[in-house]
Image 1 (tube, helix red, strand yellow):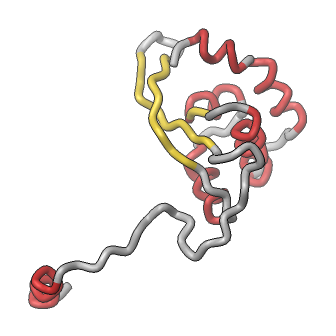
Image 2: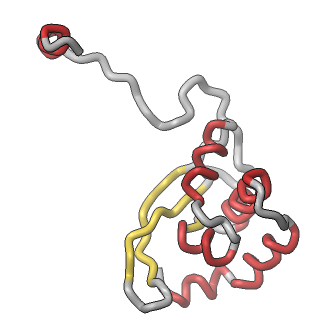
Length: 127
């Protein structure tokens, strides 16, 4: 994603979110991340840091997931101020109304059963 894509999202829209939800608390940062994900198709880690004043968005996204929000993570190319492109996380909600998932597993992990031969090797190794 380049500077034109950020302009398409509008820095003014990010600023409006920041103005509406001021503060440095984790609660405020989560609310800004959620508002931006609802407004835009996705929000990258760099956008969250630069425009939403969320210094490290990863824990805020983790906390939103623990609260029941289903947040999809993909990757996007985005340039820093120095002009160097980096692969960064891009967070999005699955639907326009940001549904809350009521599930015992909201972290995206799936418990897999190992075949018996692997399980016996693990127990033999003391694991």
